[in-house]
Amino acid sequence: MAEAFVEKPDLSPPIASVGVVEWLRANLFSTPFNALLTLVCLYLIYLSAPPAIEWLFVHADWRGETRDDCAGDGACWVFVKARFGQFMYGFYPEAQRWRVDAAFLIFIAGLAALMTPRVPGKRWVALFLLFVFPFVAYTLFYGGILGFEVVETALWGGLMLTLIIATIGIVASLPLGVVLALGRRSQMPIVRALCVAFIELWRGVPLITVLFMASVMLPLFLPEGVSFDKLLRAFIGVTLFQSAYMAEVIRGGLQAIPQGQYEAAKALGLNYWKLMALVVLPQALKLVIPGIVNTFIALFKDTTLVLIIGLFDLLGIVQAALTDPNWLGFAVEGYIFAGFGYWIFCFGMSRYSQYIERKLETGHARR
Amino acid sequence: MGIDSEHVIIQMVDVNKWFGQFHVLKDINLTVHKGERIVVCGPSGSGKSTMIRCINRLEEHQKGKIVVDGVELTDDLKQIDTIRREVGMVFQHFNLFPHLTVLENCTLALSWVRKQPRAEAHKIAMKYLERVKIPEQADKYPGQLSGGQQQRVAIARSLCMSPKVMLFDEPTSALDPEMIKEVLDVMVELAREGMTMLCVTHEMGFAKTVANRVIFMDEGQIVEENEPEEFFNNPRNERTQLFLSQVLHH
Ligand SMILES: Nc1ncnc2c1ncn2[C@@H]1O[C@H](COP(=O)(O)OP(=O)(O)OP(=O)(O)O)[C@@H](O)[C@H]1O
Ligand SMILES: [Mg+2]
Image 1: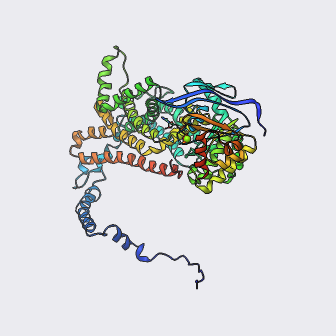
Image 2 (image 1 turned 180 degrees about the vertical axis):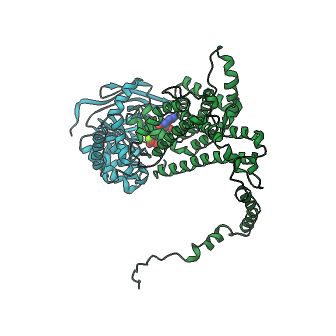
Image 3 (image 1 turned 45 degrees about the vertical axis):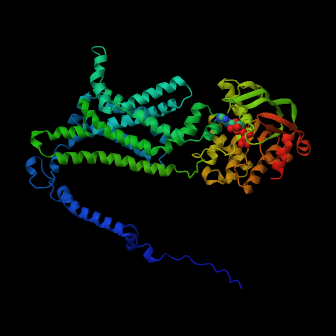
């Protein structure tokens, strides 16, 4: 005789399978070897964390103006505090620094509007950032128009310089990389050959060489009297160099798009550029977001190499400060601060890219 | 829904094509009139896909002449674009754009090729989505639909461009049996409304119901061409007979 069907109620899971204890057991002590690893790691943390925390925070000196205020045996953050303005702005005249702040505030506001979902008028913000903001920034940073005093690029430095080079590099190398990647996959042999040659040339030399050439060799080839701004040369060097890497990352994405996508788009009457812009690139770029961000992060950190041509980015200016006779012996603090500065931005980019990836997930199974 | 025998939509004259050394299409001659519904069948590798893909230049023929609605297919990109706008195509694997919603898949070409304003494009897309009976899926992504639903969206996407001819390349052969019918129903209805169709398929039931003509291809040639009644009951060529005995007893 069949039993009558009875609907079973939803019960909560047994305590042991969700609690902290269960988590510990499953993840940290699941096997004897795992347990051993856990204990060794805990011991290492026990050995290293307390002294580090003591040096960084507990015994550190925070207050004061001069090195005499650093009497304790912890870190001397007074050094960073005293030099903070320089670390941020380089040798940019103090009276004019508000201009830098203003430019960055406008930029950050625009960026925030772009990055937050559900802000209306994104298209206008993007157009503003791409086409109007560069002129605004130029006016504010460099001056020379609208009554703004000229501040030579040789005075720019610190985090400001790092951000400017990285932003320009990022904004310029992405579209250039797209064009190079499309060119490398083009049916036209000459276009393809040019793109391959360009990419392989720039990928084949170290960035240091590129910067060095740009700063030392280029003037030799130019007619006398013609001179390029040193910073402009760095921009061009960094952008061309990174666009070659970007091109290869994007090409990887292009190759992953099935032929059927091209065929469907062609059959609908889309021409080459519309096919690429509306169907292929959106999918290809989404696929390679991790690679693109990886390149951005590498670019951000590679900006330190402008040191070679006598520009003082964040790391450069920190290093310069270390040689100040008044502040000898605080190298560790300086480098920790510089490292932390780079880390904040790189980590931010990484997290944002993960967010974007999740947001763009449309749950499609690729065929 | 009658056939307009004055109005030739597709004309293929002595079309030849090679893939490297391999001669895929040999002297193909085919005339399609407005309102005709032609089913193309034949063994795998016989060149059926290649033939219909030549009509909208997804493949390039090397010899012969193809004229679509009075426009000859040459290397001229303008003419290719003109023809592609008039010819819709449905693929075996749907080829929907996975990064766009169902509605956006349908409006994409309307907005960018036909330059329709947004609201108008939206209206047209919804009309055809209703026609293939899935207006309620408009805001989903293709990856969230079943195969049969995806293929119906693909049909709607093509129809949005109001093509003069529809090409189908085995539209049901990637589908599970229970989904084949929903796609065939849409195609039968389309045929009833008088759409000119050129359809590669092994669905012989479909051929019997809607086709005016059935074409049998083998080794790059059109071996036999007849009305469905005659084609199925009295196949003349022995290769056709062999093929039909295999397909029909399947
Ligand atoms: N791009 C290509 N390069 C080289 N050979 C090809 C190419 N595309 C198709 N072929 C060959 O051309 C022949 C005809 O292919 P086609 O796809 O037209 O056959 P079909 O009749 O559609 O077969 P099926 O029923 O399997 O789809 C096949 O032998 C195939 O291997
Ligand atoms: Mg085929």
